[in-house]
Image (cartoon, rainbow over all chains, first blue to last red; front, side, top):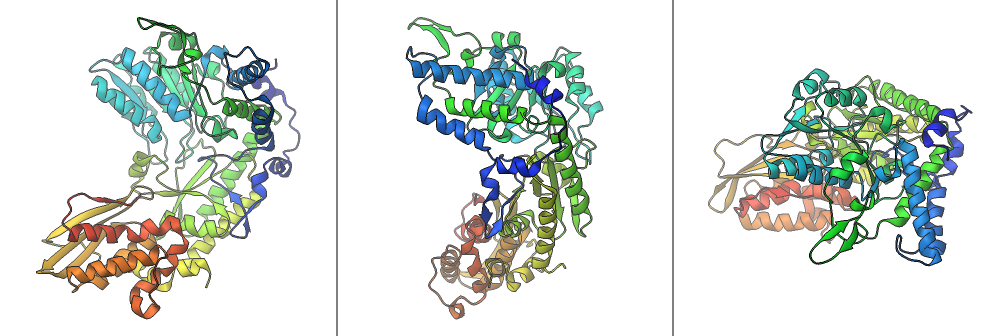
Length: 421
Length: 148
């Protein structure tokens, strides 16, 4: 089987046909408030291509059965498709083995799984956990909870005024006391791409395993967990064109093997008596209960769909979009871009003098433009910039330069409504 | 009038730009913070009573145009009113922004500017944040208000 890694690198760089891509996503042709939908809320969730919708539909029409136990034909088919998706995910992030791919409820669940099980086994009073000032609440709160329980200390590497982690300060936090570090690949609030390879290397010098929150990473970057030497990598299906309610936790086999189970239930056991339970092997040890079967099939289909594109062209296209959006928005009087890191992907966060982001969001919505406004579940990031909220336009490969135009016109409309033009 | 113009009426834009009674009160009888964690709107409402009458009311904080204008208009309307009158106006406002009001423009007075809010369900909580905070201040409730 050809791996995603190879596919994504060897595809010919045919012209990037964004209109063709848009036809694969039925929802992109709807109208909102009488205007064509301009969907710029991809960091919250992405839209789904026809291939994914069809796969889910087909699953329930022709393939539905529970997995891993039936001897009947449908159960074998559902099991095969579920496990094929695991293999597709493995190839997509270039993991060494599909045993290292755990299906979870989402990136949040993946992080909670590691915080709870790793914390339970390894954290002791006085130990430390290191995160960064860029994290989403889902990569803060699970660590706070386990640190409190274990009387360990949560240390935070600060960010600078561009929205980049201060690497020197991050490295200074690393010591023998640190048992694990948890870092976002890309900031959901600002779009900063963290130099995670370098950060992982620095942590490994102290033998510290690193969890990468890749919720925003996988949709925008070519992720290779082996090349990164990431110990854990978490992401959500719905942010990469798959269904909601499903996530992935990648973990190195020897680390996962050593962890205690997360939840108890069916599928995660080999044998149960009232005296003793023997747990199942990886990855099933961490998949208690009937899994999100159609979710996994949908995610596998979404990743296979992505294989058909030249990834470098996708990255180039997305980069051109955020560059154009940032440049054109910052030309508008009163607009300030929040987060000006050298390496950014997917996200343009901004504020307008005298106009609250929530008002920006409401007015843009009337123009058919969907953006996110608020603190983006990253209140410490907002605090760092001394603002309560931002307006965030976030892009996917199906967005167009014309949509950036509509956004810019929308911002002019916002200023007009407020009497600033 | 388009929905947008109905929402962002001149009165609202004016009170947003130049909020009335926008100050921290020295020696208030009571004050309380209201917070909407969804959009980060955060206001403190201060009240000074003279018997049953609201002798002074002010607010401070930050938030969207709807929440700020609503807090500002609320202060202008309630200063000098009794506790009972304030509660009547609170109910009137509450029904208006939820689209349940049958009152005409004359009855509503300054509140009429908020009639467009009911068309924007996501913004109702912006409009009522300061009002709920005020109500809790009047009822002497200690807990801060959250309208998510």
